[in-house]
Image 1 (cartoon, rainbow over the protein chains, first blue to last red):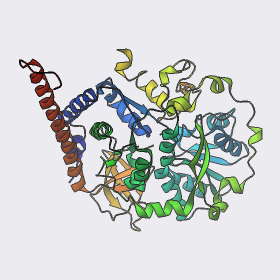
Image 2 (cartoon, rainbow over the protein chains, first blue to last red):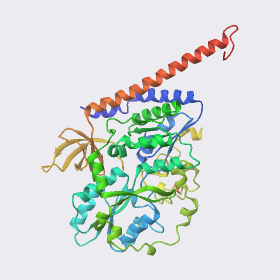
Image 3 (spheres, rainbow over the protein chains, first blue to last red):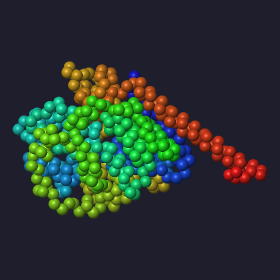
Image 4 (tube, chains in turn purple, yellow):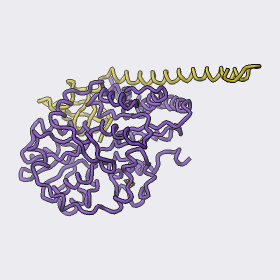
Length: 376
Length: 102
Ligand code: SF4
């Protein structure tokens, strides 16, 4: 029976020390710098919160890839939500999305101008809100990777009131890894895949990727031991030249994943290409409602006047924000001239400073570069 | 958005669509339409944006810990071999008449 004690076992300091010592030996034996990438904001949070980066060997570089769905939500997508709010709809969204900069306004700015914008904890809450306000059009501005998209799908499948619709900014995880592996400058030798997405899709989904790119992948959980064990395993795979997928999160992830949830997901969503903020056009990067769901798709139900909220973009953002390079693993938040100065969580310039899963925000919250090897 | 904390089911609604779940003292209502295995009171589940997405089978908690130990053991084993090899090389170099790399 798992209980609090079992939970704490995943933070067991003795095992943690043994794992970091083994990791240090492993990297040392490699005799060179090994660069790994994780593609999940929750991993960056775990690494920062538990101070893991300070325990990593100097010659181990773990960078955060495009693993924050809010951060890669593109400006025109925000503009659509802002335009809908200014056109009179009630826009509900996750708290992370509120300050995400659009071309000229965020949803928080629109709210300041009197538009109805509500922060919800989950999509069910947005549906409840629509039920309680039958006279209003309630639009759920949906963000998140497939694990979150499943929740949106489940809600639509169980029936929603007539005045409820969805503006999807959902993103698809495998696309993020494909994208990074094709960047010419990248030197990522192994990927740490997000445990949560894999709970739904199963770890088998990474096998074609590992085989095609000849890059090993480990699936990891979010407790300190989960992360350490996964990193150690990944370094060993890299050293051994074995492009395999290893599941280091067996208590939650199976090979085939949650099939009923996958069925729900694909009944409602389709994978389409789209722009990811600051990065590139990503083939198969976005999840959009299938044509059968046009009646609840805000993009089909309303004429969205984005021209009214568009125009020339914010200068600082266009000129200085290097979120795209950071998410591609080519730069660190501290490389940005605005980091901690003009760009702060209270007044974010770029998307990576907005979300609690954005690398700039995480580095800022946990005290600048949380990497002692940087200052050493 | 991705919370890794497991919660314990306190009660399940009559229609079986939702559950009251305790997250170390914080009580939340979770929907049960995504989870792929039947759950009962006392089970541990993972929460994602108000949905239970996975029941954590107790035996798999042990399995994960065993996996960590196995990874550790394998790493230690590799390293011991490396130590041996290094030791031999050092011995080879220092032994009288020994040729480095011979
Ligand atoms: S510090 Fe701000 S402006 Fe700089 S890269 Fe990060 S989010 Fe963009």
